[in-house]
Length: 221
Image 1 (cartoon, rainbow, N blue to C red):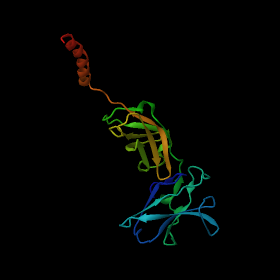
Image 2: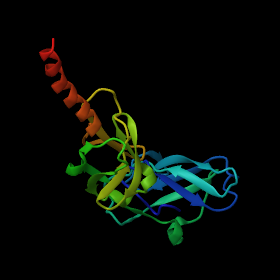
Image 3: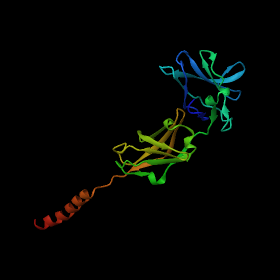
Image 4: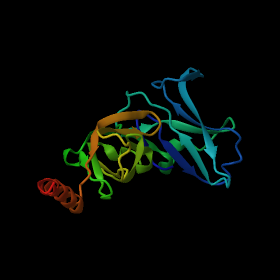
């Protein structure tokens, strides 16, 4: 299974690899423990989610449901894979299938030095936070004024992305930076980004020439 962890908020994708995984009509991922909230069956609380097999049957993807906050981080999360009502492998006995619980990512603020952006500079901006690498980079989406900030790198305390190279709107002002993690976390507002357009030296020269030429002409009128 990849990745080999999940978070309390859920909403991230798990991918299982194997053979003939497309044979089952209704593969199901199930959390199974007295602490979980969900459907009741056989005296235990279970939380179900349907999975999707690839066409060649070599992979199975499941969107992980939210977990309760009662488990400790680092603990093994109990779950089962059900293939058409038949139990799958005993995941507790297969180390490669065990999931551990990691904390939710916590993006908190746009780095102060990155809050003014020069268009077409191709410079990255950084969003600071905690446990940012507890999910895969592909689980993040960053939105600036309705446009995508392309994720470049995610580390434990920082996410870097490339903003739109032009202002998201013709209107001047600040644009909110929103972070989404998986399906259920976000939007988290981490600050505002302003676009700063540099006036070229040629434009300044033309403006200066115009200002001084007008009075000269007036002297000859």
